[in-house]
Length: 194
Image (cartoon, rainbow, N blue to C red; front, side, top):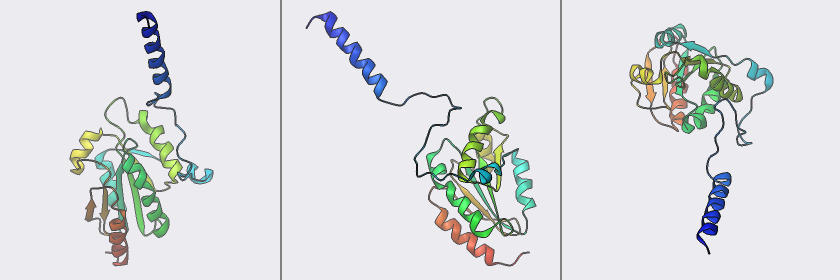
């Protein structure tokens, strides 16, 4: 084989491999189709999903405003597959107890300090709508590194469970903790309001 035809063959093989293998690039605003088994919210439910942009202090005020209810705070990010995998548990707790008894709050860590929080709002809201997350959803107005420090977290997923008086009762710092979260919530629901 000549050097020219050998080079041509290598170039063609390289192009073939690049075209058919590996990850493809898409714009961050493009939502790719996902596994058909992923839950899809009904259109009217999806329309009732909201997302507030709050600072850490605003989040603390929101939690305090839920006094008299058990509060489940789920910090998460669309960039962390374990968060996306476990998120449906928060939705299930909301459906099981209802907002009069348990206040579910999701806290997105998607804002990383580039641009404005509004720049990632639609991506976060799109995921929340697929989940039917009709409870309080918060996108932090503070970059994720600052929020990690303020919440004393190393990583998400995590879950914080507050009692009816607003005191943090239990914190879970790993994926797959929702079985334990459900047990703590069930116990706190049984306790009388302060």
